[in-house]
Image (cartoon, rainbow, N blue to C red; front, side, top):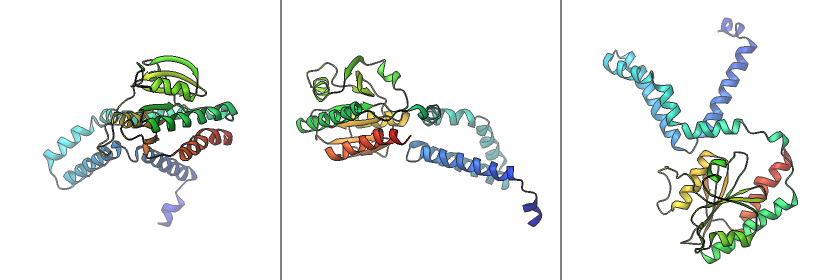
Length: 255
């Protein structure tokens, strides 16, 4: 035992710490997603491979070993959304982020006022706020706009008579850059069956990006928040304003 300790280099300790941290970050990334269930399935297959070798079950061992020959490709396909999100976050450049200006804080207030007004009138809506990961792929398939963020404009976009009221509005900084945008639908099976297409689309976007999505239910008038693959509902006016301020303004001022 002591001989083993004497032969441990400082590089070995650093190596173990780095690998441990990377595994920890991967587990945090897939926590609460469908990927964690798939990872458990892969772990079961690995255990079956070890047991079949130990018990000399040659046919079973050959079948599982043949599967492992393609495991890298299978992991890329299965975890494609999580890998895309991780790579996108690796490319973030927060070092040059500025403190949020007062005009951006005013935009948050306009968003909150619009969401509350829509909820009171039971007007459905999806308001997407871009963070670090670009939403250009979703902006391109929507109707391009270049408008300041205001309660009146958001209400006019989501009014039932508007031709683009069914899609999502995407906000970048202090501007509404697109409306009528279509978002990816989540395939999670652990969600409440009462959640509609808007909520599933909001969660679908947060599975692939770091965007914040505000959902206003047309049926109930309830405001919900989707971010980091999570859904908070219901959300009142004060909570929504505090969340946006903390998520965007205070976060930027600390960088």
